[in-house]
Amino acid sequence: MQAIGPCQGKEVASLAAMLARAFAHDPLYEYVFPDPATRERGTAWDMGGVLRYGIRFGEVLASPEKTACAVWLPPGETDFTEARMSDVGMLNAASHIGEDADRRLNGFVHASEEHHRRIVARPHWYLVVLGVEPQAQSRGLGSALLMITLRRADHDKLPVYLETLNPRNVAFYERRGFVVRAEAPLPEGDVTVWYMVRDPECQGPLTIR
Image 1 (cartoon, rainbow, N blue to C red):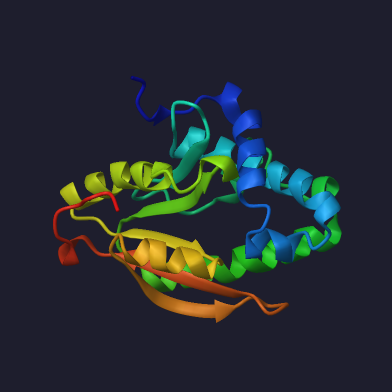
Image 2 (tube, helix red, strand yellow):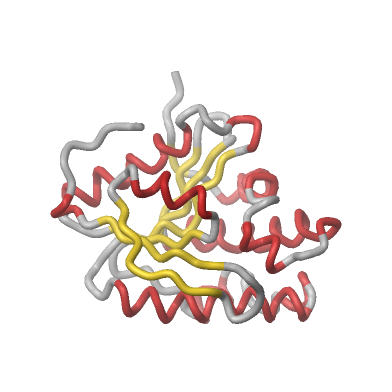
């Protein structure tokens, strides 16, 4: 039986398309791309950049069938730097997704960066994206992907940080030891971001739930 493992650059396009489907109704991408006709294409472009960044400067794990994946940035490498973003083609987003979508996406990014730096200053793991193909959800794939790095973080006594805009995800992560450290609306629209941290010192033995 195949196991969860790291992704390669040749898998970016298919994984980005999968994540676009997984996040089709996510509040962030509904906010960035309010027109459903352009949302999947725009989300896939954004996810492609995140995946390339993760493969090169972090870690991207996927299920054997590539129906779920997680993008992680490791301790000491949790900032998206302009030079690295340029290296993986994440800049000049407006030419790919339009100026309005780029402005909304940048508003989210800048607000999140400020909260990120304030909430967790010590070395930590950063869960950038965790997504599962809609037809494969509720089968434990997201939990299985998450637990691999949570166990590493616990072993090294390191916290784990993430953001989510989906209220249903808050309870999912709380069941796995995360605590909401801040919540704030985005600059535009009625959309809330929850900033969550998992502190290894507060955890017992890990089980998949």
